[in-house]
Image (cartoon, rainbow, N blue to C red):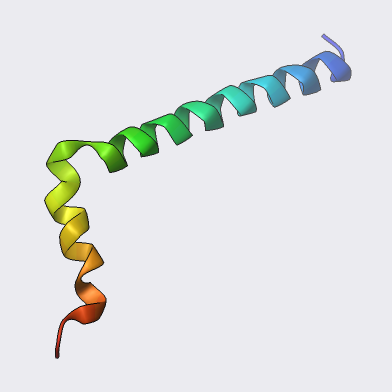
Length: 49
């Protein structure tokens, strides 16, 4: 395996890895169980001290 083949494999593997990571973050953010947590976090700036 030469450098070009290794570099191509790393680029493709990295793309697939980050795409799967992105999909996991989207699923986590849209999961219904997390809605209350995110709604509470969205109201933090409006809370009084």
